[in-house]
Figure 1 (spheres, rainbow, N blue to C red):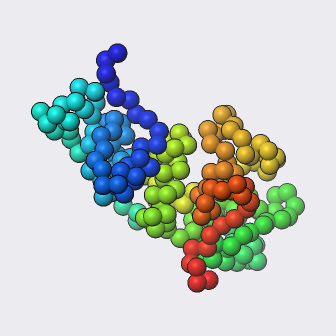
Figure 2: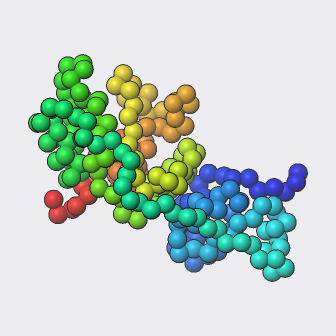
Figure 3: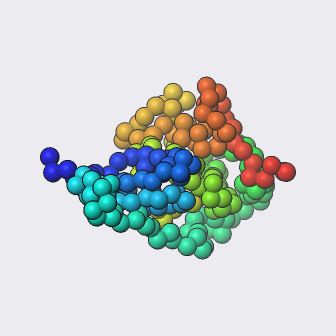
Length: 208
């Protein structure tokens, strides 16, 4: 009953929509940094409804939403430096990462499939600003929290190999608040149509 504004999910896509519509935006202070990364939008923050009213009637301007975007620099992600042997699998992984191709790793337990797959994030190219914003918007509405230090990194999900197709699609509160398959599909597919469960991936370079 104090009129305090609490942080909410989905602020980033709202800020992107406001930017496209040429509108200004007032968000809770807790969401100020998230709104600021949208860019090209006048976003302001407020702690209470009284501050919102004061900003709207012009008696007290609201502070602009700001965020210090971390420099990309060298990414602290797993790479192939500690992988020994497996030359054919390494080459397949590098080709798949470079061209955005599908990849299926098959082998006996303990041969290194999981180790190699976990190195994929370090091989993927940097996301463009548009790709990063689209992916971050999905994370924002999922309620999993947007990590501003890593929002430009391409998403990587690693569901357990025993997870059934049905289990991977539903919410699993103990591990994640967002369906793994849905999150990956919506991130890599051009649309969220009824075929979103079909495995797909868009190559990084359409010319390949």
